[in-house]
Image (cartoon, rainbow, N blue to C red; front, side, top):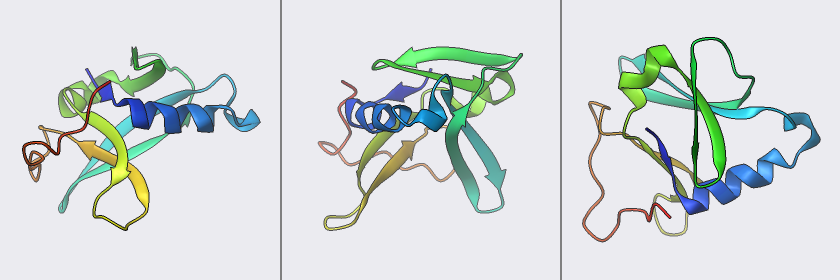
Length: 110
């Protein structure tokens, strides 16, 4: 469904150690805007109608209604450009503005 790379899983796991996030799962969502997809992630409870899965040791949820928009997405934690801050990167082939990474620049899923 969604692949969370090892680097992203490590970063999410660090956040899960916060007492405020205990017992919560990471939720992925997308808003379709005029400018394309806007990705959302945060800690949340499992709700009726959610899909509950695991990738690289991280349990995550998404609304069933968003399955078609998020299926096949890869979540990484990296620099977009050299020298920039590290951030979560969402590579989603369902996004109309998606451009696959150049060969040799794709994240490792493990």
